[in-house]
Image (cartoon, rainbow, N blue to C red; front, side, top):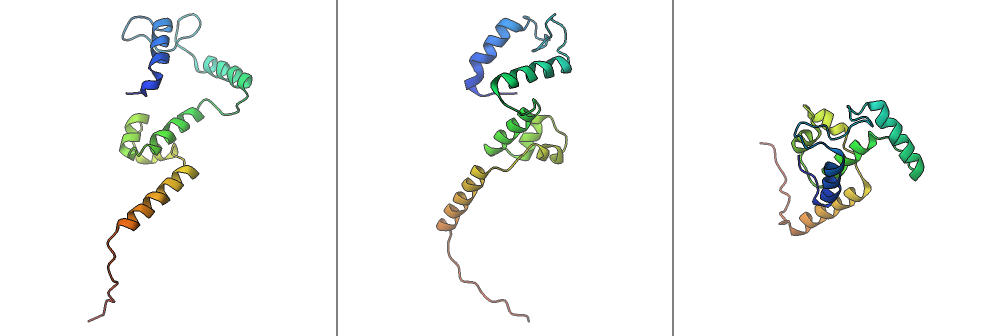
Length: 127
C-alpha cells in the first residue's frame, strides 16, 4: 500500500522509534511491547480527542480516508483494494458525498457541455 509523500517523515520517525527492525514486527504495540489491544487504543484515542476538543470516533478516520481517496477520482475497485473490501457495497459504505465535490462535478459537466457539438433533435416517427 502506498501513502502520501507528505507523511514520510512521520512514518520514518515511527518506524525508527517504535517498531522493531524485523519485517514481521507489528507497527503498533502496547506499552509492554505486545499486541496493541483494541480497548487500549480506544482509551488512548478518547484521551487525545478530549485534549484537542474533537468528538469523532477513531473509526471515523477510516470514513475520512476513504472519502478523501474517493475525491481523488479513485474507482470503486481501487477503493475496494485500498480498504480491503470484497464487494462494491462494502466500499460504498465509506464514501460520503461532499458539497465541494458536488460543485467540482457541476463545473466539469458545464465544461463538457460548453465543448459539445450541438446537434438538432430529430423527431422520431413511428412507421
